[in-house]
Length: 224
Ligand SMILES: O=C(CO)[C@H](O)[C@H](O)COP(=O)(O)O
Image (cartoon, rainbow, N blue to C red; front, side, top):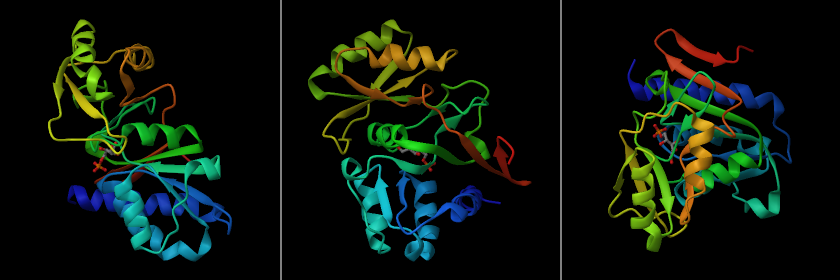
């Protein structure tokens, strides 16, 4: 199977996971990226069974609207029962690195307001230790050099993602060569640097369910 087929298999599994819980008033939290896009495309068939969605990026909001799914402001919704999103890396504790698509801050905000975070990923995303994928850090533009120097002190090799402006008007530093042994501690340590908006470690609030697509089918962690 191709990686896209594995991504579509987990998108389908996520639909099966949430479908029994959908009600007319349900507003879902929706992530960003190619796996989330496949989920959005499948969600379109159910659009009359729930109220709408909160999106973690302008791109996902546009795709949802394109399918006739109403998009709500998070402030008007409060909490969402499910947040469904992909990941760049995920470990056995369901800690993740996210933000390859530069949407990490809004993803973290919507995830924080979700009762259940369902991570959907193909098997290539599962790792023993987080950090081979460069960890994204969203920074206020005027703080970029300062934050980069502080990240070097933590052992990372930060590289400015040139030309990328986040939906919040900020910039991204990608931390290369950063092997992360204690994701909860590193997440908090980076977030404490002045000028950091947030970083792509989702460890303090990891996923609750991982749907992982491999050649043998979709594995659910924890098992149902
Ligand atoms: O965090 C993200 C975007 O900011 C994505 O979830 C992550 O990059 C995975 O993307 P894809 O589903 O395309 O592999």
